[in-house]
Structures are given as C-alpha cells and as structure tokens.
Image 1: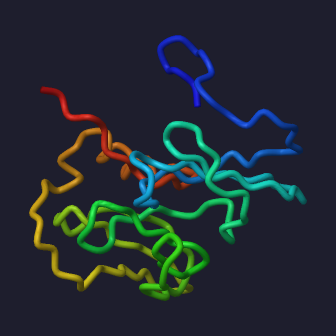
Image 2: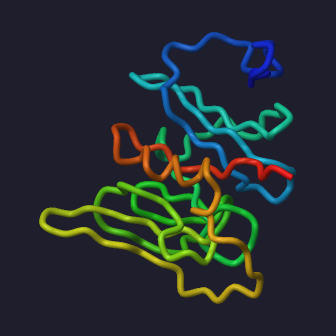
Length: 169
C-alpha cells in the first residue's frame, strides 16, 4: 500500500515473491476488520497468497481459488460477497449462488445500490441479480462518477470491478 501523494510505502509484504499477478481484489469482505481488505497471489507456479486488512495486518496466506476474485455488493449488508470460479460466496461462509459462464462485468445495472453479475456463454449473455430484499435505501452506484467510469472501463480490456469514489462535500 502506497501513499498516492508521496509514493511512500505505508505497508506491504516484506518477503521474496516470484511473480505477483497484476490483478487481485480490494473489497470490504471481513466483518472483523474495518475498511477494505486486499488480496493477491503469485502467478506462474507461485505458492504465496496475501490477504491484508486495510491497515496492513496479514489475515491469510491461503489461496482463495482464483487470483482474480470479484467483490460484489449482493445481499442487503455493507460487506461485499466474492465471486470466485462461478460461485458467489460470503467470505468464510456459505455459497449464495452458482453462476454459469465467464464473468464479464460486476456493476449496479438495475440501480438499487447492489450489483449484478454479468456472464457470457456461447451465444448468450446472462445477468444475475439478487432477490434478497434490502431494508436500507442507498444512492444508485452509477451516480458516483468514479464508479461509472469504472463500469465504462470494464469494456476496454482487462476487467477490474468498479469502486465508488469519495463524495465531495
């Protein structure tokens, strides 16, 4: 983790790595730690995996099953669920949904602040949406400029799930 203004390293892995993949995951998935957790792993035969809290505490060295898990606001709480290898799961919890096809987009397409999972299969495009009622009303995520740009950028190469920016006061 690096301070964007100064380039100063705030925290990070101190050991050797062979090749850390250029993708990973950032999302608030663990209720025990405030803020977003960060996950990455070594590619090309590496055997190290890294899950850190927002303040740099290493939470796990276990493989999550993919170097590119997708964080998804799915149910009605503030934590994100994780889409990994066609399973939507709660971190350290149950499988909520099985999807088919390649995940090509995670975004708030319907506009209720939760995100849909878009997959592709030969000859079809699927949109998976939650059926869990939310008791909390929030602003549609695409009203956030940074999030909206993240959704647009998803169609231009490597897919990285969009993240909302901080609202200006």
